[in-house]
Amino acid sequence: LFKRFDKTSEKSRDKIIRTFVNKLLLHANEITQLDLSNCLLPDKFLEILAEEVLKNPAERFPKLQLLNLESNLLQGPGIEALSELIKNEAAWKYLQAVLLENQKHGMTSEAERALADAASCSPSIVVCSVSIRCTFQLKDINDAILYNMDQLRLARRDHQAKEGTLKERTRNAMELYFDSIAANESNITEVELVGEQKFLTLEEEEKTKSGAAFVTNSSVRTIKMELLGLDDSFVKAFGEAIAKNSTIEKVNIDSNAITGIGMRALFAGLGKNGSIDELTVRHQKKVMATLDEEALPDLIASNTSILKLGVDVRNKLVRMKLDKIINANRDRVRKLRLD
Image: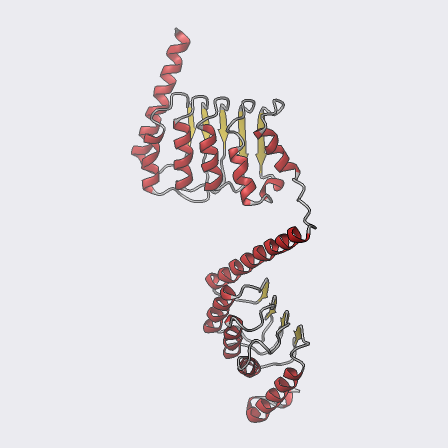
């Protein structure tokens, strides 16, 4: 229909749009989905729709869950009007999916900012299909969606708990593996996980717990955990574990995502450890800050067991101090052998 009312007939087109919106409003209480893809809808449609809904936001489309506006002519003002509607606390409380891909023209920067801001304010949207050029705004939208999904999942669990229908999740094989380490099962003496997909899919809380699993273990002697995305949370827990562990001898956690903060926590634990003679923690995704590098030698100054240390530091003075500690430990071991 809109092919007959292009920009040269704007008044006629606006009249058609307003009539269409008014007809939709007659059925607003029953509508849960608006599938308006590939209808040649211009920005003016969303501007008029938002204008009418905001006159009484709580009563107009109160049950709306899905809004599909893919493959239209939406570009700027319409997206901004839609964003204001989404931000309104009284409007569209149950809207979960907004589909805006495949527009004829790219979205304006103002529209991208408005949509990202609206998504951050919405407590209900869990699907937002849209093409956005700015990576910062795209990240804001994705973060908001992930947060809403988590809240929805928690709400479902709370409801199931109240109804008595909640079923506890069965722990997977990787979680049970680290449970066994925490339980100090003697058959596990070596941990070797390199790019293990089962570990990568663990929840962040479980990854952190895996680092703490070694605190009371007296069986594991060698640890190799590479390419697992281990972050500062894991290393903080692991650092506290090795501070009390007296069995682990070799640790290799190369090629992960440990920052300077995590390195400090790891070296603080190593400074209190008396069994680890080899630690390798190179090729992390982020380079340590200079201040973090300078703190490392003091953190392990009291260590007498470390004989081989692999860590990426740029400061030559820091490297010299670390080498001095390692060489002193080697000399001590050599003298003990001779005695």
